Length: 347
Image (tube, rainbow, N blue to C red; front, side, top):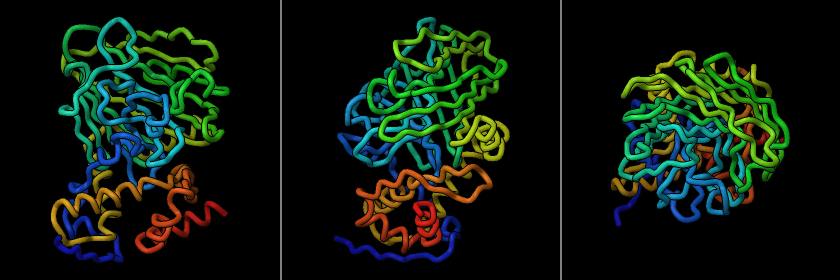
């Protein structure tokens, strides 16, 4: 076996010095069986992880996605990574074509692309194409519809990991924001009890909005929107989150994704990943590099900074039982400034 040479880099200039290290990362690693990872879009230590869910019930769906399944239930905005208990899965989006409201759509792995900060997938035989990129507190989707039928989008704040969503939401206030979005604040309880706020914004005004019948125990509405879009025309959707209020979620979104430039957000996410991956550069085979940088990628998904833009960092999602042996010490070596912030957050 060829030996691996490791260099710990003291500055965050690695993306220029060592090339695009993110190309060695495979976010699909760990998504089979009960690896409990997810393939979707996120940035290092960010609050948002915009990723597809194959379901939300059972221990295998702690992180929402299980490789080898044949349908997608939607894209939610927050996910756990490698834990043994289910939670998160906030604000599900499911684009579909047709009159009937769909709860899932078929897909093929051949139509799936997963890169650090970026994810894309074709659903329903190619009738719906979804691309998503993430920033720290926000995400932007590019959804392209084709074929015959109404262009629709399900927005579901009831959804979440851990089984029956009807008892997950304790209380909430969700409403339409003119003709171009949804805004809300929701208190939920699964592994922990918490409150989050969100704003969903469309670049096209919706032509119709149907509030779906509430199932027993549900506390907040689910909406199915219809858009007048030509064949091949894209619908852009932005989502912003905050732990404080809808206004704070709106400010986070405006600060991170002020316009609708999908590619600019994608490039920024890739640069952020190259910066953290470049702190520990190795020499070795392509397979060794794939294993190494994919592991570093998973290391830097969490803890998650849930403080709003411009605030002092405050980190959550400390799965200390799973991480104290290896991840914790490695943070102090590769990212000592982050490790200090982690400790300060716990104190």
